[in-house]
Image (cartoon, one colour):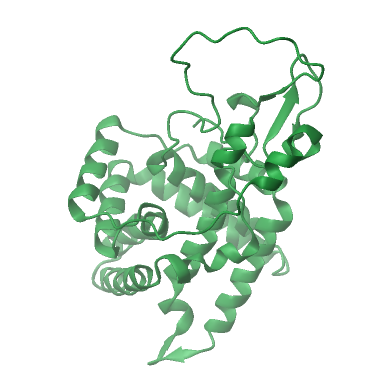
Length: 303
């Protein structure tokens, strides 16, 4: 467990319990891990290396070949658990993002509201924050600005191109506009930030993969919009509670389809290469990692 903490695979919020029973508790509640948690260097956001068009095409082919499934109910169920376990962080971050978007909507840039120009930048930062907590990594509310620091130009260009082409599609014929809206709005910001893709390879990768199961993706997108709208209709303030659930559901779908932990839980111990010697029984039973079936957001659930 100390090694996992040092590697960033576990943190103070990762739940574990003592061998032989007991309650599941965060590692920060175990005094024997206090030194390891304190020594853990703070996570520094780094710009991911750029992935070219060829790599994006290869990734799209791999995902389509192995196929994937979009379970709308499961995405929302896991999102609800994520929000419950990180309530103030995720709800607060969503509220801040909404306020920033509302203010930017009043600022025209060349006749276009700044909120539209920066839509993917803001969306990418908020989804990145959710993704960090989903993967059990430390995060703070400042993560909503990750889009500005990690991939501002690609996110800005993706937002501009997507809005222009979707707008043309809606004007000429509604169906192509809806198709492009779902294909690009769901995953492009995260593909740019998380995978280091440039704007057009990210848009094409998202479009190709979403097209494989467009109707389930459309269903998830539609339900997410309706959940957010339901909160807005509840005296307006309800959106601060429903929108985080919608965002979390979309991020879980992204992780299921594109994530590096799509098959195995990131906190599962690797298979030993040599027979392990039998240790002596310690005076304090060591905590064991939470199994995937009971995992919270700090230790990823297996899709």
